[in-house]
Amino acid sequence: MNNLPEPPRQAEAEEAAIRSALTLEINHRLRSARIVGRRAVIVAEAGDLSDAARAELEAAITAALLPLPDIDEVRVALTGERRRRRLIAVGSGKGGVGKSTLTTNLAVALARMGRRVGVIDGDIYGPSQPKLLATEGIKPAATPEGDKLVAIDSRHGVKVLSMGHIVSSGKALAWRGPMTGKALSQLIDADWGETDLLLVDLPPGTGDVQLSMLSAHKPDGAVLVSTPQDLALIDAARAGQLFEQGEVPIIGLVENMAGYACPHCGEISDPFGHGGVEKFAAALEIPFLGRVPLTLATRIAGDTGEPPAAGDGEEAAPFVAIAERLARWLDTGKI
Image 1: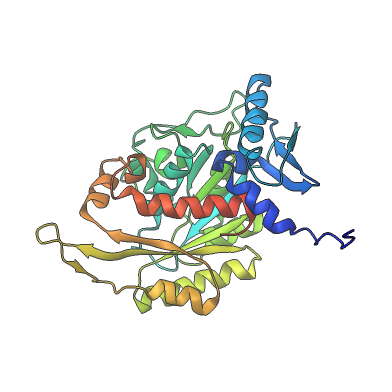
Image 2: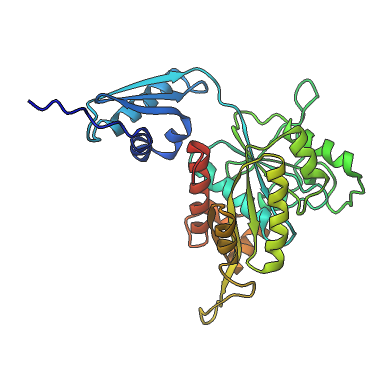
């Protein structure tokens, strides 16, 4: 008779196998996933769901996991606890690296995955999100109590608030540091409805807005954006140091404007270099989230308020790939 002890269970591998069988939206709700004997035991958040939606969620989890090897039974516990809204900063060390465009497209891609996403335009002096999300000229309403702004719904399924919605278009702001910090807090503390994820499009650098956010609204993580050339990478390193000093996890780096395809001959050129951000990330042992090419179509889409990630074209693919890595980090803490 074989009395050899059973091999120890590989908890991380088992959880990874379970998560890989579930959709990103379901993964977003998972609080724990383990295998006991031949039974999968799942705990998921469902405080925002109706009874019918809770039943659908439980059925979807069961149907996805029963075909897995070593699982004969699935038990699902749905909690009534509402999820805490999470804050992700998107920053850069310098301007002109495409950070706002990346923020917009990540938000739209995540919304298409089923996330309830909002965008805060933290660039108080140079707001871009009203144009990028086609909400120019719309003024935010106030809550009935009059103490909060109400986030604006864009046509891309993403809520948004910006100083560009409050201050008249083209008007210059001459505010000192404390006022910019108060303005950012007003946007973050607004009524965001059922939104459970906010992306903050920060201004370039490491100034008052960043410091105010770290002290009053510490982000859950930060995504850094840079173009490949050395000058931009030096400034990105400074931005990364600021987040590290504030004990904000750096989720990863994105290389933007990585190559330009000539619309006439198709030849790829690299006006800003190529691969610098990926090498930089490897040297600092920071995850590399992906690269976004420089294309005329992406620039035109930004000017017209039609983010590429809202469609299924070639220009959407890089943003979707990066959004999937960000979603994985949100769900598991790993890329």
